[in-house]
Length: 205
Image (cartoon, rainbow, N blue to C red; front, top):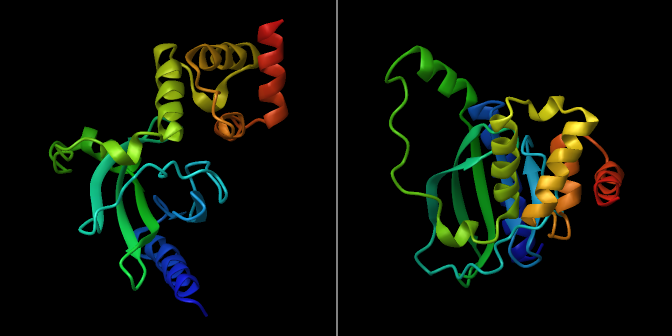
């Protein structure tokens, strides 16, 4: 087995093991830097899938970069995710994979609202600039959750007219300009990709 295959197999083993000890609120994503795609997801809840773009192509990992974070993101449903990323390198020190551990904070934040001070303060640092420069998944999540929150709507409860309003707003913002954005939004909204295209056509007409 090649060194790269061994490294990937080890990463997958870690990805499968972490949710077993940390519970169902933890997702682990392996990003393949060579193909610039998601290679594997354990316990997926972010509605991404293997083969989706990683959006890490512009990151120039320094030799000292091993652990990035913790940092916070917004999931497709508006919930807060606390994440940490581990850069996995080959024997020559070259970055080949990034293993991201995403912990959905929904249950903990509910407890925090009930019991003051149950959780420590959120990290003072923001999102790592390089890691999020091209992360259109994260930008779409924020746009969709904010759009629904402003209208007191649930993302998973939109009727056809409201969904088409959202699609029109996404189109106007340029949010569907990425090659795989329509497929991702379809998964977020629980509809088919064809439905998204039909909504866009109806809006254009």
